[in-house]
Image 1 (cartoon, rainbow, N blue to C red):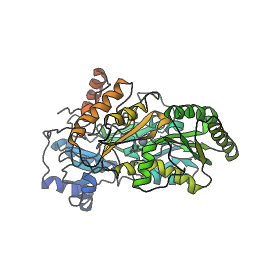
Image 2: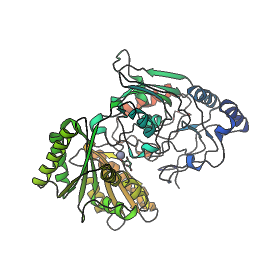
Image 3: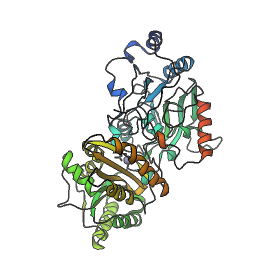
Image 4: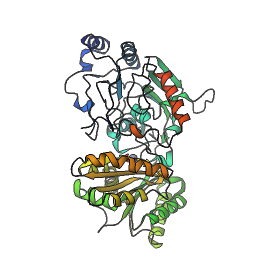
Length: 474
Ligand code: MLT
Ligand code: ZN
């Protein structure tokens, strides 16, 4: 188990004492101050990062959170903020002995304004639960991701989560209207509001998006939600080459237009890994080099079926696809999606894993996988799946055991390649601790200065999520 890309020494923070624990117990109740059996909090989802925290705090409100942070700021106790602990870069995982503040119990307030489609909810609501509640009113969360059953809305905002339907609905920046954040001094900041249009100030609430808990603890979120589509269709196509995948993307955009909601890629090696490790059955006979998953969201099934069938027929007719299946039932649709959404699980079961999440211009998207494969021939297995419609590749490399040499050389190779091809070293997973050493790659010094200055305003003592995306002010 490693704590970070490179070792980082502990900051000058106070050590936890029994009188601190007594304060926390008095503030939020004994049973919500956990000091035993806390591995599920101290370790990340990939089980490759683990910190040495001695306690987990589970406040149930903004006020309790504020009292805790005020106290920690005063005593200089470092805190890591954690939602559903589904992140993939260790942003919510402690490195040293930071206390863990979990937002899991902050889930009382949930209010939908049906006429405007504006939802205000506490940060601890699980994404899928919030979405199910919205379904009763004909609405839907605009974002969806594989971790929906465990990730929390506050964590989604803090991580700047993207997911599988960003292609149609846009990122969280398209939806977030306001949020409540407890900053590093314990002050409660109500940022933005409930209006869809409000240009009276800087859109300060948007600083929370992708902030990884470094500016404050998000305790409440206000966002626009979208009408729930009454017609959802999915199809999977088997494709021989990456250039055909790109041509299919153009065809999907022109043929499916406004109803195109997902355009996802699974490469042939990933599909074999899914078949081998989960195991799940491929829907196609034989193996293909690529698979694309296309989904549509609309409100008129006949119209959408006609469009999707037209797209699949043209793809097969033009020989852009070698085979194609449109899901005929909810079960088939679920199966197609499992192949994509469980690709990370299949890769995680494949051995020691090195995960990447990068944005690339589409012309370079798959060349990274090919060059990585070439470089690691015989030494590691290389998988690529991701959100092709968004230019977001999830490159995963696995080895039978931990390979020290690879750990040192693989990230610099991938990240330098990405930046030199006009990409970003983090598309949607963030920086956390995993990419800390590379956080300034591709960024200007001026942007770095601005971010550090903002950190100083929100968290002058540097107690929130230290050692990660933003260099410590300590
Ligand atoms: C996904 O798209 O499946 C997630 O971002 C998880 C991952 O990249 O492994
Ligand atoms: Zn993803």
